[in-house]
Image (tube, rainbow, N blue to C red; front, side):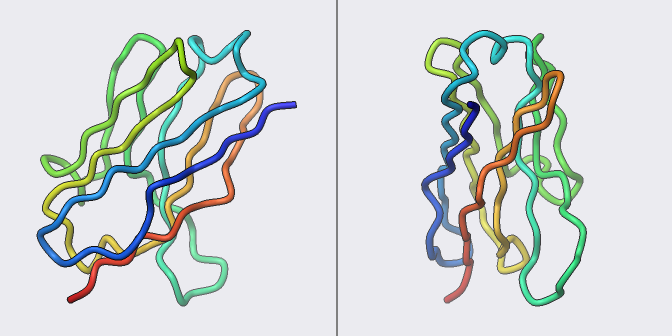
Amino acid sequence: QVQVVESGGGLVQPGGSLRLSCAASGATRFFEVATVGWYRQAPGIPGMARDLVARISPSGRQEFGDSVKGRFTISRNNVQNTVDLQMDSLKPEDTAIYYCYLEAANMYWGQGTQVTVAS
């Protein structure tokens, strides 16, 4: 059974940094051929769609949401089955629940981790 678990969220001041980590257990057979990444969902609006933050393909090609380009970086470790999101120059509008996902033949989601950017 595949489990995706995020960590590293919290409260940070504007302009600060956070690093989110995601570990996928039970995915050793296919992690390296999966696209992995992060989406986020802003608080307060039930049913609001999740927005792409960043993702990285099996070949290492990276894609970022327009609002985070130049501020966030993504990396993956195919030995440890992890994907990290380094977030710099954080803004209040980055406040959201951040969800890690793993996409191979199926889609797997974590439970989310809260990131709050506030003074």
